[in-house]
Length: 207
Length: 207
View 1 (tube, one colour):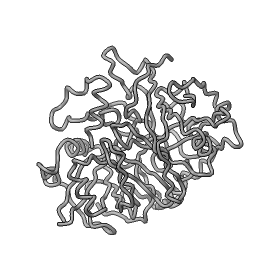
View 2 (cartoon, rainbow over the protein chains, first blue to last red; view 1 turned 90 degrees about the vertical axis):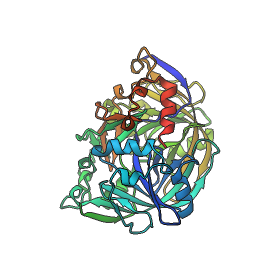
View 3 (cartoon, rainbow over the protein chains, first blue to last red; view 1 turned 180 degrees about the horizontal axis):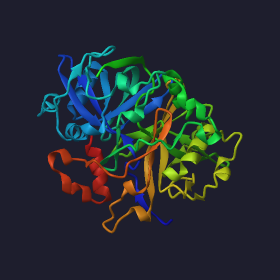
View 4 (cartoon, helix red, strand yellow; view 1 turned 135 degrees about the horizontal axis):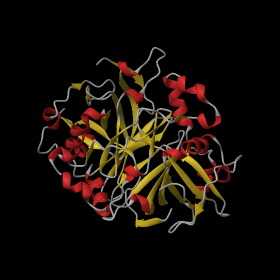
């Protein structure tokens, strides 16, 4: 297949798209949408979010060094888009989106009950490459998961959560039918039934 | 919905899953699978890949400070899994997978022709948090894209590429039917037809 070559741009695709909640020193909450996020390390579990310095959430998270990543289901896609377009400086997005905030367990920032998975994070390091975004490298302290995603063997079914991705300016749902699991190419099929902490290890083995 | 709380682990989901090609100083190539990757900055375009220090690709990329991210379609999922399970120290994965390597434009590492999108990267900084993975922060120098993904308006259709994601130890295809585009919640629908560089800007506006 013939290819066209383009100058460098953000072509990695698809990427996650999440709602990030945070608080400032006064305890005021904000929410915004992030697609520039990913896992950086399995042990310790690290993730990052990249934030434009002009964002209100940049100010809030720099003040408290804590935030929560909320994974949205596809029924929330319009609100996910809205929280990426609008600024907390002008809009009370949490109120406008009618999100239910729940008290965090290990961080001061609240999490969004309507999102099936919520990840509490503590910022360890802020990188400032000097361009459009600063990079907040953070430790994952704990995760809240809807009980209806966990079966009797404590296996978590992310595929039941209707999660979405962001691809080149568009939002897409995940196809629920998996096309493989880690190790299937060499016959490691039984590992699919591992419980949560083993699945986490399995993730870490991917790289 | 009642939730269960778990200790910190790599619960961000879904995440990308890509094939990374690299060369060592001698010009020998290797390929391995990475899910711990993401966009860090829009301008300059930065992405990272996290690599376990014991990986052969860690050695190769540290030697040459260059690599290429190849985005696989779902028909390659078994090879994607295989390249994550097997080590280049014991297996010639490029030969076993019958990948066609093409010469890079701006880096010495080759790209995989069978992958519809290929992203050439130069390492700018290696972070070593001291845990399971080192983090290779890299600049995106250029991208090769299959011509059959580009329409007459030069709009790139990533949704035509059958890309896949990794979610909690399993591989899933993307549903081709998009459920929104950036700005749709506030009526910015016409922007969907922007050409590539505008779409790139649109991505950068998301955060």
